[in-house]
Image (cartoon, rainbow, N blue to C red; front, side, top):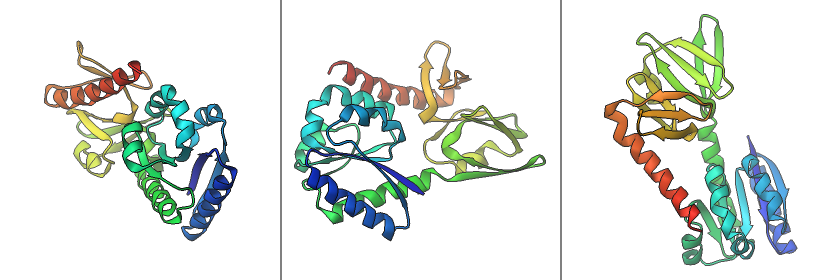
Length: 242
């Protein structure tokens, strides 16, 4: 497993101490480490956000980038963020959307280890693969790469973000029971990866996925889907007011 970490601290000495702690933790946990050092160049960090699993950001630098923070966090919900150099009560009110943690000092090995291990555990869970055995062969599909699953009573079709479709003799309920919590049933015949749900059409009761697919939402699942997109709309509204 590779843990991709970004750092942007104003103090060079703190940066070096943080990196030395991270290297020690990676060795102890038998984890490969890819550290991207951005110092005060937050614009470069933003452009690399989609490739990072965990970032340590100087709170003083974050205050100057407050206008753009929420948009980046919304676009990259899987990236855990740690603010360095501020009391807990202040950071909790500032980084409401994605507070993976906070540290008053970059030299807190115990905190760095706890936060890094928490991130590694999440990656281990989310990088699980779905073993699919068919007459055509055996496949290991990353669960994160699945867009949605469709049942025709006898078979289940699993559509991946790459466009690849896997077809297996399976029951949708059985498949749903082994998928992570970010999968949701929206219809008797459909289970979707909610992270890949782009929009909900309240008129046609269709869910639009990031690949452009439009999937039907049936009445028993309508309230749950509306609640999901109500929460997303609330976040977008908060961003627009900044």
